[in-house]
Length: 190
Image (cartoon, rainbow, N blue to C red):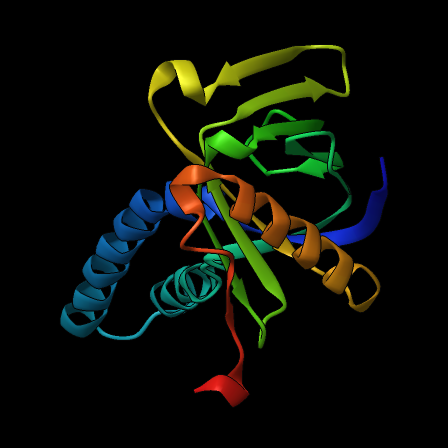
């Protein structure tokens, strides 16, 4: 069984930026009150400095998404694929972890490749196992839950063609996807 190893990019929503939104709105309200007081009472050192400090806090909202890179191994056991992501921090206060995606060909629900971003999107109802760096872990079987999960692989030049060929082979074997071998979104095909 061949294994393809590369550094994958993960685009993660910045949860801390979202949590701070309420605090920022409160600070904005205080800022408006201080500006109104400044207009009514005249200029004073404290009434000028406070709005400037609060404005400085409001200017730094944080990125809406974060990019994290993690070592990713993709292998193709008989009738499926296994994706192992090592040392990934999703910035969700759970710390670094390893995630293993076990996907059988019948679990595949959708596959799409975007050539301009070198991104392979996989939607499946496979099994995901998460192991924390401190020994904790969890497993979720999307088959049993009747749900699906998606994963994006940003393929490097070295692994792109062999991985795409193997995924195309899986799609041809999967009865639910036989008509949809991974669609390659090449700019020159448009």
